[in-house]
Length: 113
Length: 109
Image (tube, rainbow over all chains, first blue to last red; front, side, top):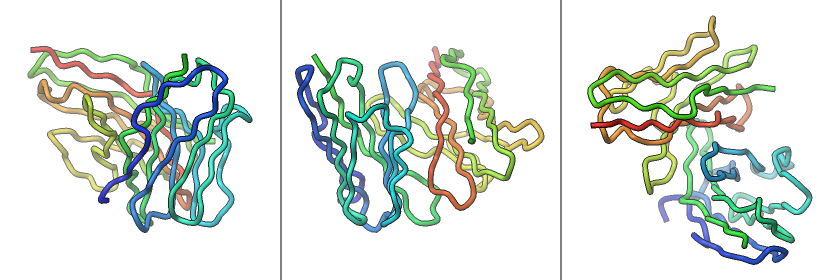
């Protein structure tokens, strides 16, 4: 597809369950980001991948959060033992070399009951 | 580490009035600055970047290195400008973008 694709678009889960969110970046984009957007709040950086370099995980809020990316393709964000405070929209964005522009997906809205 | 500050969480203006969204940053070098916008039920998208020095949808933003600011301005706000606006910073030789907390703009008729 032409844009960044995320799935699922909506996920409702029970507290304590694990969830996996997926991001398909724009083909050829070397860098990929995950951000969290809580209701009424701004963008919170979680993690970013740049090619085959070690990811910058400095924004992950706890060890319940992890993310993977194989090469320059799909990325998955996994949240283990979800808590109610994990409820948010999780945004993925990819970035082409030298363009200086992030292209965002529509986000995955996570609701933890 | 670099930081982006948007002091206004909410901004309400009347249609036709000027609007200015403040953005300040902390970085000692020469960063790249951006404004991103998220309209209702749409994905976040780039509005403008300082290196382009262009006006998009009537908006302009000037990088002031002395004041470390990158305020977004529009002389006559329109109802379709109602959205959430994020200021973002990128430092040289790094792909990471740091975002401010965002400002929600409401333009009233």
